[in-house]
Each structure stands twice: as structure tokens, then as C-alpha cells.
Length: 442
Image (cartoon, rainbow, N blue to C red; front, side, top):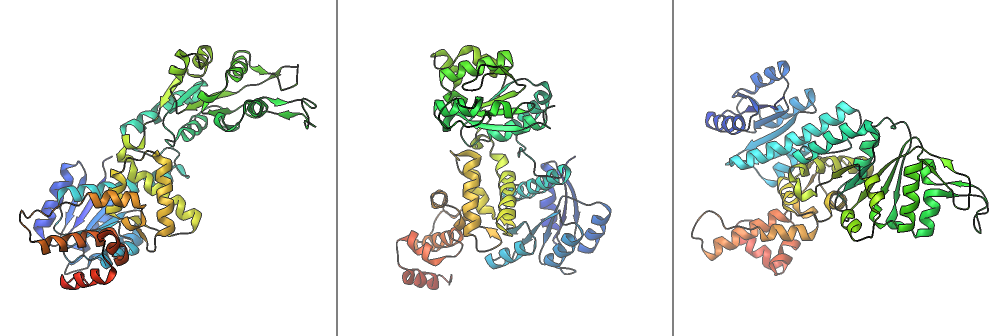
């Protein structure tokens, strides 16, 4: 079902422009010049997003937003105005607006902001339907394909290998496979081959008998036994030593194991889901990984894309992470500013989803308002924004006009923090104050 959007503006030209932009994107659009009629329409046909002008004769946009949010708390609201200011934007988002759109706006600005608002609305719907946080967040074609594969292979009980760069979410996919399987009532046990020596790995996976070595005072079950009836997730399996590969192969072939120091086989029933960030197939060809084990554990292969390969998922992921951080830290950050989201969208994310989590955790710790802005993001991302400065559309500008425009650009990036702005310009704070006063920016 296509998203439904209600737009409200007393200017017929703006109403027509917005309707044309949104209908071209395939949205279901209802347009009103009268806020009261728009509210009556919403009672009969609730929508996913409301876009409203602020300055209207019958009812201002802030009052309209308050009434919409009171009746439909999950409906996002974007306010548009020709009288925008930073203070007004922050105040609007504090009251519940998703974003504040300043006139004149471009079709691209409208599309981007609407897409981000609907992403948040979609995520909330996923949480509401499932009753819990969805495991795999994303709407990109690559993520939809992975979710489809998980739905197909989950109940089959076959072994699965998940490949992908570090931080791309391999364990989340393994848990999703377990949760869709007939073993979901059994245990899900995770083990990382890169964290232990061979001796410790042997003991962790296979357990030991009493007296097997000094200090072995009791019999201990290993993770393979613990996972019986469920799923064992083996991360970084490409780093498993050859001797351990032989023992794991026997477990898969025979359905039984020997504890360290034992001579009596122990029957087990476990599904193996493995993961690796390295090319195991190349390791097989080079003799570093057993071919017979590779074929046993790689019945189905799921390759996870890096975050840079599914940028359309970034807003959805960002709000999912932000909600989790709010719950964990007791914060009430309601939104991520348009510029901050655009910066996240353009970033390469070599650390994938894990890096996005790290960036947003830092941002929520530093954020002083209800909205995460560019100045709350790490310095290396801000550096990218500084490099993105473009000259205004005018072909000719005086040096003073160029300086004024660049100072305004830096003030937007830093959230109006003059000390930081002066530092970037390479001048002291007093000099910046004089320039701002000269250009009427103070």
C-alpha cells in the first residue's frame, strides 16, 4: 500500500507544487488550503505524513501539528515556512515536527525529507506489528532479498555460511535464521574463533571430562552440547585451526563428539550457522581450510552488503539505533537534522552498521537539544561537510559576499558555536564577532 500524505497550505501555488512533486513519486496525496477541513479528512482517512505551512490565517501550523500529534501520535509532521530560523526549527522539532522546511524549497529537498519521515514511520510500524524491535532493519532491495532467503531456509535446518565485512550484521542474520527455524525454542549460542587459542577453543567447543587436565575438577559441557536442540553460531570460522576443523567435521558427519579427555561419544543435535569476513573459498584453494568441511557448512551462503551498498537504509537504521540509545540512556532525542542525516548518507562507513552505532552513541552523548545536528557528529564527518561547500548560484560575488556566505555555512555546520567556527576559519573569536557584526549575522 502506497504511503498517504496530506498537505496543507493557503498558497495555491505551493499546494500545487508539492502535490506535483509527491504524486510523481507515487504517493497518495490529499491537498487542502483549509486546516479545519484537513483535520476532518484525517478523522475519516488517517495518513502517514502531514506537510503543513506554518503561517495560515485560520490556524497556524504549530497548533495544527499539536492537534494531529494528539490524535495520531505516529503520524509524522513536516512544517514549511518562509520565516524559518534555527531557533524556530529546533522549537518545532521539540514539539513533535519531523523537520522544518524553509521556502523556497527544491523538489529534491522535499523528496529527501519526505522519504526520511516515511522511513521513520515505516520503522515504527514494524515495531508495532511485531511487538518488539525488528531484527533486520532495511528496505533496500539487497536487504529484502536477504530477508526472503532467511524465510526460505530458516525451517530447512541446513547449515548456513554468512559472509560480509566486519560490522555488517552477521550475528543479527544468524539470530534471524534461528528465530525462523523449528529450533527457535532451543538455545542460540554464539562463539568467536578469533578470540581464543587452539587449546581454549577445543575446551570451549567440546567441553572436558573431570581430570582431563590440571584444574578440571568437574565435568563440563562445551558449547556444541549446550547448543543441542538449537543453533551454534561460529563467527570468524576462517580462523579455525586445521586440527579443530577435523574435529568439527566429525561432529557434523557423525552427530556426536568426544569431550576433552573423554572416550565416550556424546550425541548432539545442533545446526551450524557460521560467519566470516575473509574469503574462505580462497583459503580452501590454498589449502588453509578443509574442502570437505567447507561444503558441510556452506550449504547456503548469504552475502551481506556493506552499509555503503545500501545507503537508502541509513535513515531507517539511524532512527532504530537512536530509539535504542534513548531507551538505554534515558534520553529523549526526537530527530536527526536534515544536514546531519545527509552527512551520514554521504559517508562511506568502512565500519558498516557498527560504525553508525558508534557515531550515533557519541552524538547522543554530546547532543544538548532534542535534535542531533552536524556539530554533534565526529570531526572527520564534519570535515567532509566543510569540503562540500559550494558557491551560491550567482556567477559573480564580491569577496565580502563570499566571506559572508562561507561564515553562514560554517555557523550552520557548527550549530552556531562561534568558538568552533572561529577555529575552522583560523581566526580568534573576537575577529569572528567583528565579521559577523559587519555582515549582520550577530
